[in-house]
Amino acid sequence: MSEAIVAQPGLLAAFRRAASIALSAYVLEPDAAVTKALEDAGDRGARVSVRLEGSPYAGREPSGDLAERNGRVVAELRAHGVAVHLTTAGDLPVHMKAALVDGVAYLDDRNWPADGLDTIVATSDADDVAAVTSALRGDPAADGHLAGEKRAALRLEAQTISAARGDQIDVESESFGYSAVSKALYERARRGAHVRLLVAKREFDEGGATERAALRRLAGVGVEVRVVPNDEKLCSAGDRGWIGSANATYEPAAMLDWGMETRRPALLRGIEAAFERNWACSRPAALG
Image (tube, rainbow, N blue to C red; front, side, top):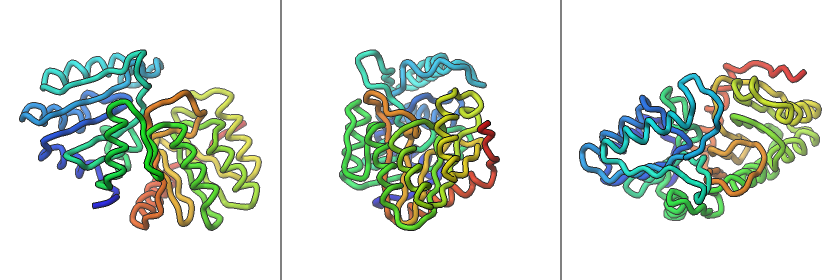
């Protein structure tokens, strides 16, 4: 294996046979299959460690406050022998969804969701694995096509958009704002590219004036903006693609996150298929 898209059951199968697992997430759902698989691995004696965000966004979620959820998960994981690190003021914030399983890196564009509607990239490339290993220790790294920090990840996505051949560009982001990505999309659309943009419905409905203004600016140059129940982070751009867990929003101070640029046909097909699946269940955004 070098790089391949795998479904969540493939990741869970790797957990079941693993001797060593290191995983990072913004939050984990207590009842998610991934959480249960981590507990099972700890119970059978595997070496399991998890890095979670200690101060997630304070907004309310259907399943409760995110910090409360992480607190419950931490207690559950530790009861099964899992070593858990909650980030503190001395750590970089973690938004990166990644796992290292017996030397293979798994990168998720969502947050290891219970519904399984995520796109996971598995890679055994030595440079990729080294970059993920460093990020899981709290020190972001990059290897040219894979970034472990949000600003670098968004710049890779913007580069993918700007350099792509052809005039069809499709992008999905959970939330959206002014960034290198919005600038690249604006320029490609202004020069005649057909650009489709998906944003997550919940974030759009709850979002502020800045997000809507950024989306209206793109719609003004012909970008088709739609909302979707899902929250993947993808870019399909002709001969290039990008996938990550970094939202196309502002570029903050350093934050653990990931983004991968690719030209591998198998990955491009998987990214395109995920976008088309999500586009099919989207609706036009009411930008006002």
